[in-house]
Image 1 (tube, helix red, strand yellow):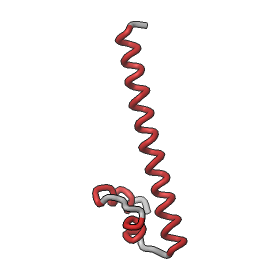
Image 2 (cartoon, rainbow, N blue to C red):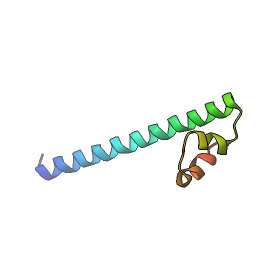
Image 3 (cartoon, rainbow, N blue to C red):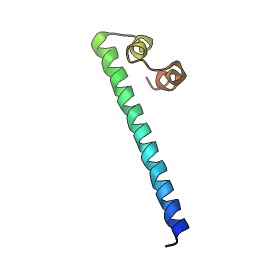
Image 4 (cartoon, one colour):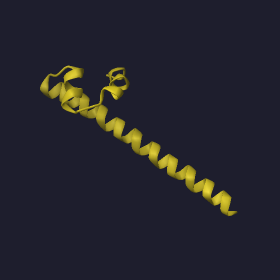
Length: 65
């Protein structure tokens, strides 16, 4: 395999790793939101406040709740 080919494979692998970590964080946040809403009887907005989810990310989570 050429050096360029190896570099491309490594770059793709790193991007896949990063995407997987992001998806994992999102899944954990969704689970945390649901748990805190159920346990503490909070609204989605209150739960996101408690978890300090930035306003810029809230729409994504609200549509999934």
